[in-house]
Image (cartoon, rainbow over all chains, first blue to last red):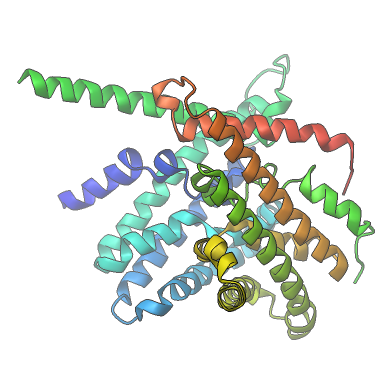
Amino acid sequence: MSEFKKILKNNFWFENPVFVQILGICSTLAVTNNLRNTLIMTIGVTLVTALSNLTISAMRNLIPRKVRMITQVLVISFYVIMFDIVLRAYVPDVSKALGPYVGLIITNCIIMGRAEAFAQGNKPLISFWDGFTAGLGYMFVLVVVAFFRELMGFGTILGFQVLPNSFPKWTIMVMPPSAFFVLASFIWIVRGIQIKKDVSQSSGGENK
Amino acid sequence: MMYPNINPLVLFFASIFTSNILLTNFLGMCSFISISKDLKSSNGLGIAVTLVMTITTALNWILEKYVITPLDIGYLRYIIYIIVIAAIVQVLEMIIDRVSPNLYMVLGIFLPLITVNCAILGVALFMQLRNYSFIQSVFFGLGSGIGWWLAIVLLAAIRKKTENAPVPAPLKGVGVTLITIGIMAMAFIGFAGMINVR
C-alpha cells in the first residue's frame, strides 16, 4: 500500500514530469487559454496514460525488445482514437475546438516515458496507478496555467464572467508567449518551495 | 474538394515566421528543450526534422487522398500517419547509413528521437485539417521544418550566451529557458504584419 502512496507523491510533486523536465507539454499547452478545453485534454491524457500503461504492462512479456517502441505507439494510438471518437460523439464543439491536438496526445512524451520507464518492468495494477498519477500531476500543472490565462485574458473561469468589466483584459494572456511565461513563473514558485524544503531538511539532519 | 487559395510560397514563409510550429503551436517542445543545450546537436536535429517533415507530409498527403478518403477509414488516420512517420525514419536511417557515413555520424542519433516528435505528426494533421493541395502541403512541411530548425538553433545560441548569467536558483535550467522561449515567441509575433494567411 505504501508503494502506491509513494508513487502518487513522486508523480504528483517530487518528480512531476512537467517541473523536472518539461515533458509532454506539447499537446496541451496550445489550448491552455481556455480552462474547459484544458480540462478535457488533460483528462484524455490521464486516461490514455493509465490504460496504455495497464495494457503494455499486461503484455510486457510477450513483446520482443526490437519492436517494443512501435508496439507501445500502437497501443497508445488505439486509446487516443477511442478518446477522439468519444469526444466527437458527446461534445462535438470541444472536439472541433481542440482540432489536431487530440491526435497529438499520441506523441505526448509523458505517455511514452511512463510506458518505457515503468510499465515495461512492473505488474499491471501498479502500472495503471503509476500512469494515472502521472496524468494527475500533469493535469494539476496545466489546469493552473489555464486558470490564470483564462482569468486574465478573458476575465472568465470556465466561461463564467468572474472579473468585472472594468478589469482591463490582458491580450498577451490569450496569445502563445504567455503560456511560456505563466508556466515558467509557476515552475519558479514550485522549485522555490522544493529547494527551501531541501535546505531545511539537510540542515536539520546536520544538527542531529 | 476545394483547396484553400494560398500561394505555396506565401505559405512557406508564413510557416517559418508568422505561424512557426514551435513558437505559436508549441509542437516539438520535449526535444526542443532538452537538445537546445548544445548548438551542434541542435543543428543536426533541425536538419533531420526538416528532412523527415517534408517527406512524411508529402507521403501522408498521398495516402490521405488515395487510401484514407476513398476507403472512408478516417478513424484509422492517426495510426496510419504515425506508422508512416516511424517507417520513414527507419528507412531514412538505413539509407543515410549506406550512402554517407559522415552524415550518419551527425544525424544518426537524432533520427529515432523524431518518431515521437509532436511537430511531425502535428504538421501532417494540420495539413489534413486545412485541406491543403499537394504542392501547398510540401511547402508547408518544408517551411515548418525550417521554422523549427531556425527556432532551435536560435535558442541554442541564446542559451550558450546566457549559460553563466546569474539566475535565481529556482529558475535555473528549465525555468529560464521557458522565459527565453517566451521572449522569442514575442519577437516572432512582430512578423505577423508581414504575411497574412487564413
